[in-house]
Image 1 (cartoon, rainbow, N blue to C red):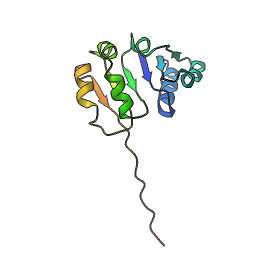
Image 2: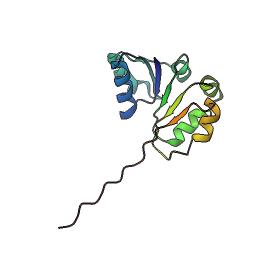
Image 3: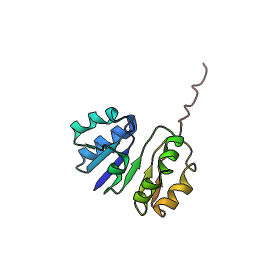
Length: 127
């Protein structure tokens, strides 16, 4: 399987390393390229540009800093053209419905929302 990971923060990097370690061909892209470079030692290809990263990959995992960043990327017509008909796994922190309509129309329904939400910790009982 050829996979692209968009965003190489803590979660994106962990996903890219795990997928490469499982024998998949992984390409990663990050706005700040230097943050993606350490993944090369794990066998991950570091793309020079977002469109280069997405070309030829299915699925594409989006794991960027926030919903605004994800929406900005998905507003790029060149990216949306490349994503049409592909599987997009959205893992950007936020609300599950925030990008659903836009991403479903781009990918024609091949959209999986794995949006992490902020965990709430139970308060310990007072003694």
